[in-house]
Image 1 (cartoon, rainbow, N blue to C red):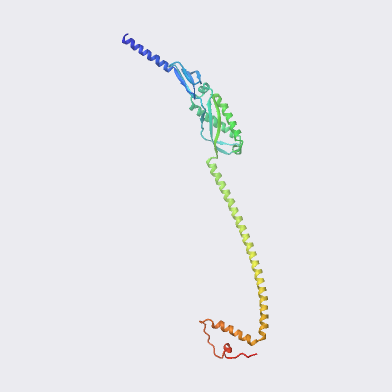
Image 2 (image 1 turned 180 degrees about the vertical axis):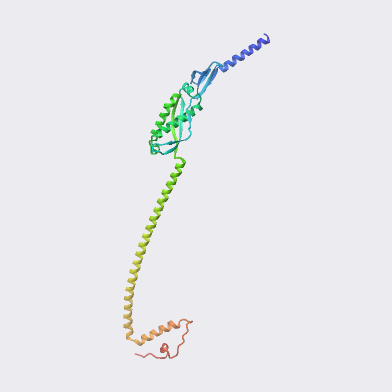
Amino acid sequence: MSDTRKLALLISGFVVFLALITSVFIVQENEQVIVLRFGNPQEEVKEPGLHFKLSFIDKVQTYEKRILNVDPPAEQVLLADQKRLVVDTFARYKIVDMLKFFQALGTESAAEQRLYTIINSAVRQSLGRVSLASVLSGKRNELMKAIIKDVNAEAVRMGIQIVDVRIVRADLPDQVTQSTFARMRSEREREAREARAEGAQLSTEIKSTAEKERSIILAEAQKDAQILRGKGDNEAITIYSKAFSQDPQFYAFYRSLEAYKKSLSDPETTLVLTPDSEFFKFFTKKLPTQ
């Protein structure tokens, strides 16, 4: 066999081998494949395993069989009561019709962008019919079911089934939040001022009542003390009068001794008196005996 023939056989074998290799494709458990011929869909393959196609002519487009996630950007929504909310949603979907999906979208990234628009539109329409109280109440589950229904009505045309849609976050816009906090702070400060004013007024009333009662108690006590003191002085005078009337001279002598004790007990005290002064009369005079 000539070298030329050997080379031709070798090239032919390589071409056949390459054709065989390129005509085989493998579908994984989590994949589904659509076979394209010159860009036109020819076959849908959903079963995992080894499959065949026309070499160099057919191409395969692989899609995910599992549930996919889509996280649209947060959007500001106007509610029925004219309140604004910044709503952040999260959705899960799966491709159920590859042909529709390929014809409408082509790729999963294009599907995500399309779903962003559909989900945000459905959220706007559904939330635009309810108030803020409904969004924050138990009616939220019914609201989410309505959103899923609206999104599925659009997604089914693209071969997509929406499994779930959830509102991850629903907050007031920053400017509204700040004004709300400022209003709440102002209201709390007003209530605090009123409470302090009421407390100060109550404190003044209590102090005034206590001071009044204190003055009355002191006045009553002083009155009783004066009465008791007057009665005591009266009884003392009576007793002294009876006692001293029995011996006036002894009473004079006793009073003089008291005066001596008070005036002469302090060593710093100096008295300048004559010896015949009335103050010293009991030093020179003897008491008469009874």
